[in-house]
Amino acid sequence: MIRFALPGILLALLATPAAATEWTICSSKGGEASFSVLVGSLGIGTANEFKVEQGGRMWSTTSGEGTPITRGQAFEDDRTILIDVMTEDMGTVVAELRAFKAREGDQPVAIGGILRMPGVGSWSVACDGGEG
Image 1 (cartoon, rainbow, N blue to C red):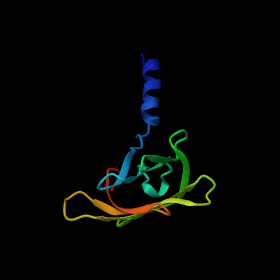
Image 2 (image 1 turned 90 degrees about the vertical axis):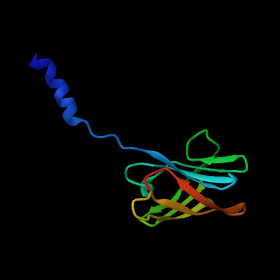
Image 3 (image 1 turned 60 degrees about the vertical axis):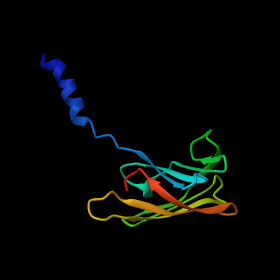
Image 4 (image 1 turned 180 degrees about the vertical axis):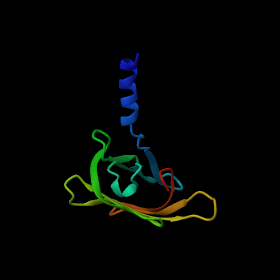
């Protein structure tokens, strides 16, 4: 009987908690543009999955989902989120997200800022989801 229980006990000891991931989505009020980042347990600074949508077009780091992009920079602290995504060859910035966080008392974190797509336009955005 112990022989059968031992592998289960060993697996339980080796198990690590799953890293929670959630999309943070920053979108303009009218839905004209959005910037999404998949946030894991280590925060936005280590994120590698991004999507940008504007005017019926999509750019994505996920293969087969729209025009390919790659991470340029991604920085987050307790007050700021700064992210740039670029063309696959890293030659041109496709989109820049500049967002700011605020918390008052026990209220959830409020996140908002500017999404800029050089040569396309700029939008004020509100952000939902993620680690905040």
